[in-house]
Image 1 (cartoon, rainbow, N blue to C red):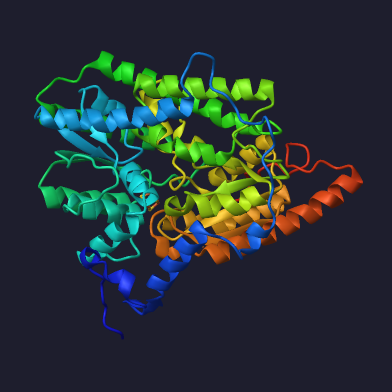
Image 2 (image 1 turned 60 degrees about the vertical axis):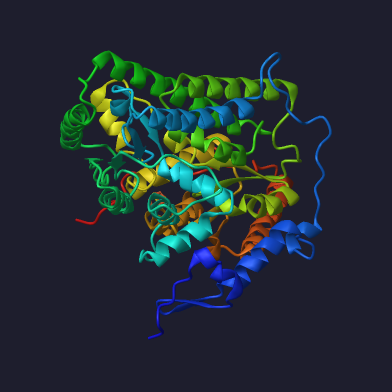
Length: 490
Ligand code: SF4
């Protein structure tokens, strides 16, 4: 058994070493990092870059007359959330850390300032500091099989500095395991580290398509308990009208977000699914803020204008339309996008973005809505979400990120992929990736997989064109989701 050697990121050891032993696996860390950076900066000799598709002149969209672009507005909204938290900290007020799908409307009833470690970790990874923080957490004793977001967050909570976005350290924690159960242990560790209260809402995995009434009862009971804990924490009384206002705003933001996502259904699409990834921070961190609702309403307005004017943020010919599955590899957005761009492959379906656009009418519906996150629903619901989107938006292939960080998501994918092939009749390819840890992504493997997908889609496209058939999936040329298939064997 080789000795476990952790790198110390403080002395940048990983840059100097060729090999790193982690458990029984040997990972060519330094070599991979170097390749990754070379490929990203200069992809000459790269199979995928030999073909170059030019931008279509006049395709670039314009902002709505007299308004800033929605992208600029939405960037400002995220900055505002972090600035508000810093200001609150300076005034001596409590600042919380929350998981992305905690029922934040409860905290908003107490005017609490909250920031989101998942969003912070994604930004840190996108700014290329994720690997260093992951390794700092590994030096603290956390295994490198733990989700990269958790490792970045645990290192940051322990005081590891970063030049990426900074957020105030927490005075309390809001955790909900509807995203995954890694979240629970991650937040428990931070609560112990800082000796601060942890308010936990436990949402069990949904084994069935419908959320059972008993589960709704269980959740409403927990909401009531969380309100009592928040009253003790803040010394304030719960204000029903503030809670209702937060719910109304969350629903307005979700409606505008879903409307924006739905524009991917136009052919050609006025956007690339990659644009939506850029706005994830807003829908996660600012759902109850009027600025986010207005930003998404402006975004939808821009897409509407683009449809009328024939413009698009995807400024290239739309040779193929695909579903991109999973959280993107934040440190490698450019390497992910380039080969798609070079082959005219637009992403017109993503489950990750609309999954955060849930709506509800009352507290029980709210409980049911919070029970539905990508990693907490049964395979049938997961298939139905994706296949409905594929039929609405029209795709001719799918590209799946086997995200090493997110085991619950990636673990369900082989069966979901099988169902796509059977029900939608599309080619599906996957690649090994990671949302935060660069060691788990290889540009070469990714390029080869995209190349394979493009070749199959192109061959089928020509075949269908010759037969006068529809190229893309829709409700007529694909199978209905078969609800009779058991999710669980009794
Ligand atoms: S990426 Fe996956 S494993 Fe990590 S926190 Fe999110 S749901 Fe959990």
